[in-house]
Image (cartoon, rainbow, N blue to C red):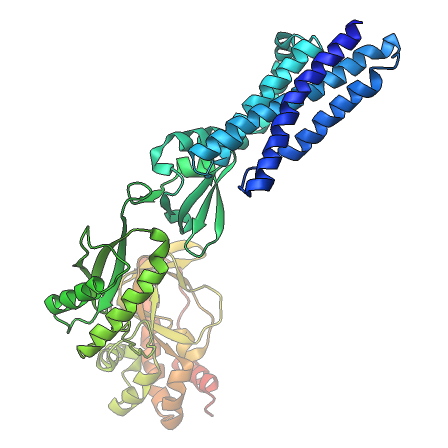
Length: 494
């Protein structure tokens, strides 16, 4: 008896949403009004199924053990139909009428979530007799884990609340996101992202947390207010700024697509590399018409400027051609003067020095660099122009070289291995005279070898005397004939 009584009451409760949604379907079919029908048809089907279930099962004797399950199914159907009825009245009718059909998805989804959570909690408490407090207690750890895993989603949801509460982000507001170069109208704010319609009629979905954590420029004060636009034009320096501003302002005044109040204006914005930058400021009633308005204004500007006999400047670049040159170079006269200071080269005549100068090389060494190394092959002489060097023998410092001194003469004239290591103590500049540079001079004048051997013999005697004065052992210099033979063999002269 109790079972039939409950079934009959649930049936009566199902008739209310069924009748309401049938009335909505009839009104839409008769009047042709664009009523929201998202929940209408499947609510009607669910209510009819519930009524059918009551009438079919009622006359039959249902086993006692199945009775609770049938009551639960019937109760769930009833609550679902009522949840759809409340959601339809609140969202699809009330909000749809109040906001003139432009209900933000964020607000719609939030209200629907609240309605269905309320009826779901009611079902758990009334139908299944489950205490919600126990469910909340047992799911605390799970909730914390889900919150940690969904940090970004939660950030978007919280940011969505902030955007909904901020008048600067109302639907219809035009914004410019500089970092992403996105300019568009806010058409929707959802739980995860806000949708922006660009001037090209593209829909761009911007995560809500990006809107609240980055710089977003709001274009205009609010929807419906005049929308300011700044248009930049570059004109030639030969065009008088006063005349240019008058021409550009006339182009704005002739454009029917822009507002007369606030009045448009033109100002000099800056002096650029190729011309003068002008800023054209005007207002549009609808920012969505910017592309068309900009097209018409720029066309007017081109014709107006061209009629004045002026042109729009092109980028100018000056190309300078530079021939590569040696990093280190020295005047020929200075090289010749330094060569003349070397005693062992004194047998060379003026013409010989002139022919030798183009073939010598200026060398620069930094602090700590090795110029010549003891025991290595060598065939060049170095003259110190600037800086100081250290002379090392078997790793020990045995002397110094400074400006005006030279070293490596034995290697130049006889090809012997280097007697010592020479290291730059600071940045030094040296003139290098190699065998290749000296050979043409000696080949042309073989008699020079005798004079060179005399000078080299005296040089060796000076070195030996200096060593004896320092109490160092020194070999006696080889006889002059031996030196001359070495010179002849080294330069290939018989």
